Image (cartoon, rainbow, N blue to C red; front, side, top):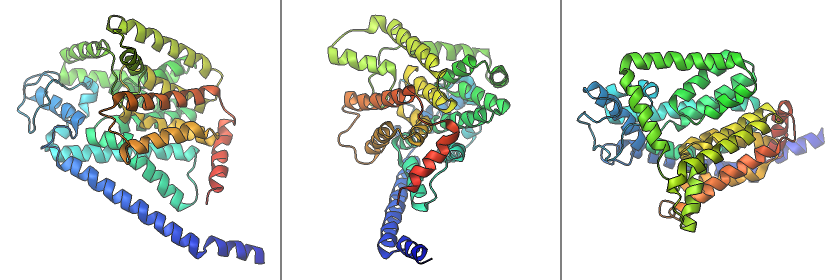
Length: 411
């Protein structure tokens, strides 16, 4: 009895209480500053064409269509300066979601889009945390939530108004319901993810290799229903225009942007460093490497547990797509959680530090040094990929307990 009282007294010691209070105040201050930063980003959306860059394109696509043009050809007088040389790159199905937003003033529409995106991101993470629970200590829970909120992929998505958080929500919920053998919900959600963006297409290949036909049927049904709805509203010509746009994007030269972690961007950086002109063979090189990586990944997934295989396919999808901007890397929170639960800390720590350092205490301006920033980003993706590729140390059913045991060791 005396030993328990002593242990209890230590848990509420003044030094520990003061430390926790200081930690909470620091987290609260950072949360407040970051929230104010995002508020002013939205408030200045009309004055600065860089703020909400992607959202403005999606928003203007709907205005262009209802003004008599098409969702890919400018025709409307916009309430902001049109971004020269850029156009809406949403699919007709994805553009459906922006019809109600286009009925609101731009600032209100952008604020609503960002708010709903954040809600969906943490809703999706709540499914991940059902399998891999957060620590019991409230200060560690607060730190994890704040890390997610202030990580650069989230910050970048809020500044640009992209699909990143919504795609992450769909990736997490597909994983959760597929893990629970709920083929109907998982299939419908994956179909919606594919209609919005093409990063999750590798998941279709994975479930195809598992021969989960009922799952794939509901995915195809979801895609078919949303396609028919978009066809009825926007017409067949919108799909033809989008097809041409997708082909032109895929045929563009190598990118080497600071926030693009794709395999294509890696090739572009090699070309810059070695002063090589690879543009004539860009399509062949990228396609050959992407297909090889896909084949090797699918082969390896047959020998991995579901959580590891699904996570590996997520990372592979970000590598083989033509553009892998960092605001889509929020989906990596699932692979990072799986690796942490299985005591593979190196990839998690490296990626986490990169996410935070870019946004909060950047040593250099990555925009002015795209080779440096892009190389670090691609390395973090490959490190996650290789860590997942190596396999599991614990079964998935034991991973949640393992994570809990690790976190209980923390103060």
